[in-house]
Length: 128
Image (cartoon, rainbow, N blue to C red; front, side, top):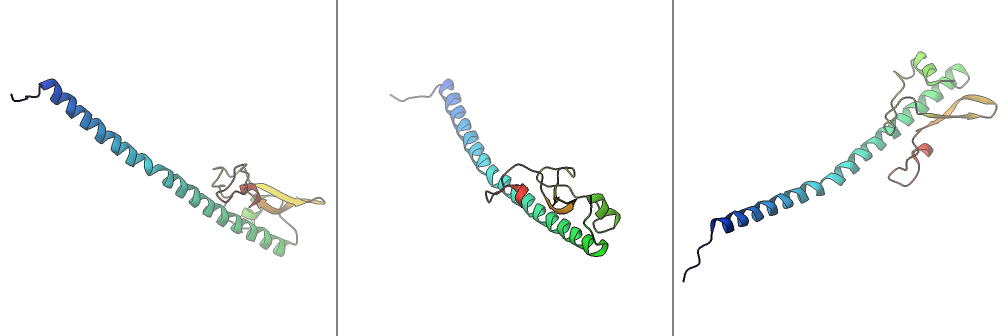
């Protein structure tokens, strides 16, 4: 006696095969998401380091030329030491930079990111 599959059995087998392929594709797709997010964060950290270096150099140049530290980032723009106030790549804002002065001088002596998050190296962005 020969076994003949019914139409229902064929549809069921095709459906199971299709679902298996979709699950496999979803798994492959999802396995590539974390590395991309990691690379985006790494790129933002590189930009943050470059922006901090540029701003600190501009603050130093301002001090050398003017004999005092700037009171705002806009002063650096006015003196044409930077083109514009950069955007903090971690907070996506140009208003979140934190400034550090001395107790007798409220001017900008040093600058940091205003983010409260930790970097990939485990240190807070606000300490970079």
